Amino acid sequence: MMQFNAPLAYTYKATSQFDPGNSDGFHSHPHYEIYYFHDGECTYIIGDRVYKLEPGDLVLMHGLTLHRPHPKVGKPYVRTTLHFDPSAVRKSLHPERIHEVLKPFDELGNCRVNLTGEIRTEFEALLLDLHQLSSHSSRFRQERMNIRVCDLLYCVAEICQGHVQEQRSSSEKERHVQHIIRYVDTHYMHDIGLDDLAQELHLSKPYLAGMFKEMTGLTVFKYLYDRRINQAKLLFQFQPEMSVTEASRLSGFKRLSHFSRIFKQSVGCSPDLYRSQLHRQL
Picture 1 (cartoon, helix red, strand yellow):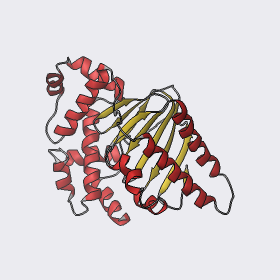
Picture 2 (cartoon, one colour):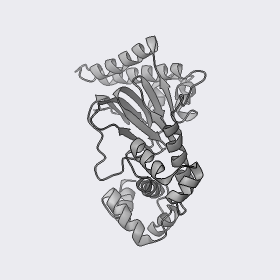
Picture 3 (tube, rainbow, N blue to C red):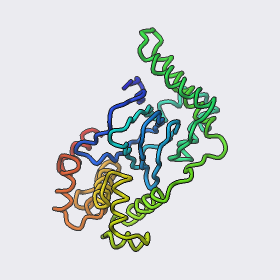
Picture 4 (cartoon, helix red, strand yellow):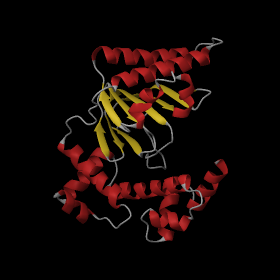
């Protein structure tokens, strides 16, 4: 991973297999993200959207939406990512172009565009150029890399001009999984069972459970608890004065003891410790 002086991080053609370890893999961050899929098999979940990625897919994310890749085990997983703080790049962009360049992230939010032909060749060349420049020992390396990042953002803005097709024709399974995720995101504060989801989607419980696990790598209930835990983490981050008890309630847990146990299993520490550590960083 290449770190810039500004709040920017660039990783070129990472090939490591995704391993969330003790966490669920879902995460969010205040930075904008450019994600480019080079090769492999991967389903990407962003909020309530499910994308079956294809080589050449450019994914733009505004970061705060919970997202998680689910690459297929045993298959390649090659991607390039750029995380950047929009406030950090504004000073490097032309003042009259700032709104236009950041518009794809500000207004489109999270979207996917499949690159083909000349634009794909140009975009991949820009990614490679930025990567190669990172190994130079030039006195002006930092300034040149900042220019390359701006050029990449100008290219993305041109790609996103006009209509952006956020979701190509999806399979029936993708639509069902998207429906399940949307339902969970809407009702995570309440009791949710397979009966509720089966009735909502008019599917049998065994088929629904197996399909969701196949597409996401998670059981429905694991996703539900992950969604609740991530909601609590967001509450701790953006509402520092909120108590653990209130965060537990607003995240959909009926008992504080249950919340504390699930939180520690997922995050690796108690919610009280997570909250205090987060406040020390603020």
